[in-house]
Amino acid sequence: MRVMILQPTYWARCHFWNRYLNADVFVWLDHVQFARSRTKWEDRTVVESRAGEPICLRLPLRGTRNVPWRDAGLNDGWRKHGLTMRHCYGKAIGWHELEPAMDAVYGSEVSRIEEVCWRSFEQVTKLFGNPTRVVRSSTLNPVSAKGELMLELVQRVGGTRYVTGEPGATYLDQEAFRRAGVEIEIQRWTAPRTGRGLSNPSVVHLIAEHGAAAAVKMLRAA
Figure (tube, rainbow, N blue to C red):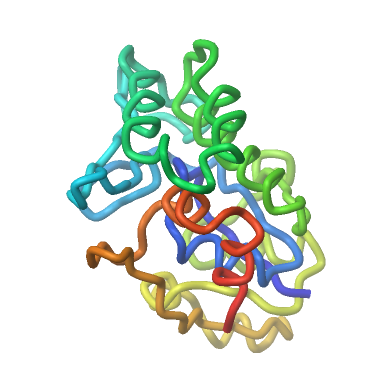
């Protein structure tokens, strides 16, 4: 059983969905400490304007970042992202599929960043047919940290293979995984580029330009 584990992500980019669509279980890592930096993409996404310019959309933090992911506060202004999405993709062939999803994400206020990430994730999984079992890490009551945490979570959901990216693999105790009988599978997949060269765009771009069914085929490809 293949397991992927990632923190809550806002309109996740293509590499996330390749991993998700090829996994049996996805652990939504909501109990770990919230973090944001220039190199982290969990609380932001990138779309492309009609002119071909990349636009980074980041969920604004309210209060401290020294809290678990599920408790990070959300500041005002985030619902304007829905208008940006419409401006970028409102004339695209897949917008008729995306529009209800946008309404579901941006139609009402919430108070936490994780809630918006969950809304965006849930809407895409509905478009993709809900193919993968999803478990919140906070419901598993894990006791480990860092690399040991990944192994514990895989074991708690009955996994035999942990699917991760190359950066994440560097933090793992490979010998501990071997002793536990859990294989580490490193994602080696080249994300698509937009017609104007933006690499690994938000899944929103792929659905808008190609439709949900075609996007699934592109993202599931080895």
